[in-house]
Image 1: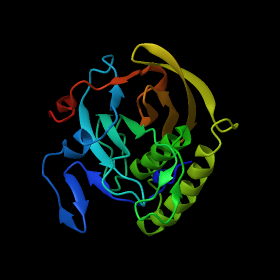
Image 2: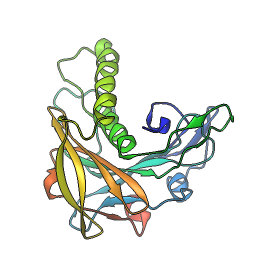
Image 3: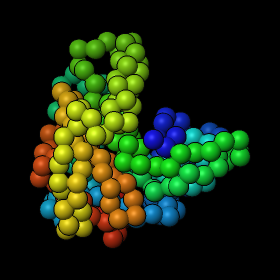
Image 4: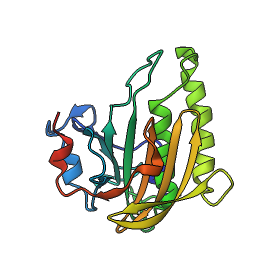
Length: 222
């Protein structure tokens, strides 16, 4: 699994990249448009709301955007809500990267893989959904524990924790690996030129399809 899939690195949020604590450009499309790979979202079968989430770079990389997320439906809660029943599906696009030197030239980064997409999707689901009965002070312990489990699962996509699922990508069926939990679902696979991950809750994964996004402005409209 690529090190870019681990927590850390420079994250370009929907408000623009933040470097050294200084806010970058206000245009939310800036980090997305700077990527050297195509973005994927839900295909035209999705008629609901679309919104930008974040694009970012992995640890020990500078400048390049390595992955990003596009949301569909209701935005996941940013803080604890006792009865959070929001329905959403998030598509994670990850650049295909070969093994390469780190930005500081002190080591080598692994190539990205479907496991990279699985980890990013899994960690995204954890950040968006957590047990309502859990005390806020214990949340970080829970996140650390669940993130470790998600990392192990992502590293073993062929294992029993995942099931096969075929979904359309640009109209052609593609194989994915899929798993459910009490918090939602996660899937991961490949697409032309990129690796794809997705997670959601309240939206059936069996009925979705993916396609390249011809106009990211569709994700900036209310």
